[in-house]
Image (cartoon, rainbow, N blue to C red; front, side):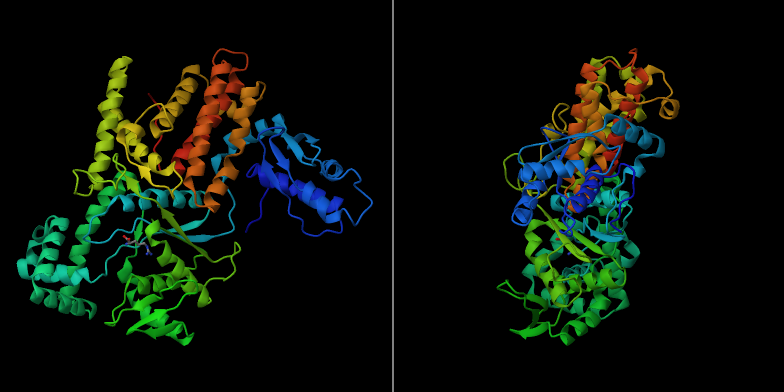
Length: 594
Ligand code: ARG
């Protein structure tokens, strides 16, 4: 793992490998100097920054390099092994080696990708299996916008890892085991004695049901006591209580699935209850290792740097959120053999996960060093979704937003705007109802996803239909339409692109063609960066820039009917292919016609 094969996968890494050789040749006595190659904006496409620090390392020791870092830079450039990637280098006084990539090589790499498929540009990551724990709403409670963020961001991360050939276990860690079930089951039994025959009918709207039972729970002390007993019955495995529990979970699941199916998100549910049987064994191990201690009637794990310990058994002897998460972490490591565990929740839960991971390090489950070693656990926190008023997002002042309604509204609005646009440009007659419907859906749901993903996930973001459905700014609408236009250029040319891929040849003659081409071959390293740092906004930023660079190219270079037509059509096709892969990784369905 971690090894990189040839091809264009990661340009930065390929350059690093060349400089590694040069560093070894130049400084045979200095072992393991890491090449510092970065993208450059000014004098080259990339630059190598090793000269300065090498100068301070060797200046007293050798008579060589009299010219200081500058002469080290010169030598590093001279000692580069021959490579078709690099067109030329130049060295700045301070020793930075500027690298200009070969146009021919860029063009060849793009054409090779067109023939072999975008899969050949997938990043290579040092992990084979990962758990992505995302969405994870709580049964019987509402699935709120926080869960929507978790679902959208988690799905994208899972997609990026899957593209990188990581085996991803998409886990829906639903809250299906809290004490709230005692209350719900008891209420069901008392209000609907015939609940088993009535089926879903007894409960109807689960949220209303939850509210009603909570009201009784808060107002009626004897009901509260009966609810407490019910928890004991349920956890003791009473079959009737178990059936009621299952039924309640099933109704919730159907509601959650409506959101998942609209978003095209796949998840495998392993709720809190799944890990329950593993808790005693795991706690035995932790007690044996001296981690679990008694404190104020509860059992806890102390964590360095945290004023309060992590409570793992409540004073009444019951397990809690942390107990389950410890067992789940253990299970994922030992039973599922995951090397990377990624958890998505709002930043409010950061300290829970920090403590959880610290406990796992104390237990020796995770390596304790800070370096990038595996197995690894990462908590991916995200900020709040805000309404237009800058406060937590809600509709009609108090009610929380029903996610299904929100998605439906996004679709309805995008349909309206699409129709308007088609009426204005006189194309409405060319569209079937089904096409309208599908495009509205792709654009509407895509807009919601993109508006979320394009932000740095840690910042709060303001939810606005108007902003996300704007066809001009950095929105899914703009990007989807840009892609559709590229497809229409290709269609209108009447050329057979499959044939061109094999027999045509791509030449990057114009400066704007080159800028676009360079951006295309950087796709792999961008996805890798987005994966490694678990930051989808890096990919959004890349996609937006791609469409911008395409627009520039298309403005300055005539495609159809020009002498360079076939080469330029290949560049159009490559842009469309990479855009589609971006959409795919972001969970957005592409549009081909507008
Ligand atoms: N159900 C939790 C909530 O709604 C999120 C669970 C996240 N996953 C985990 N393994 N704790 O806040």
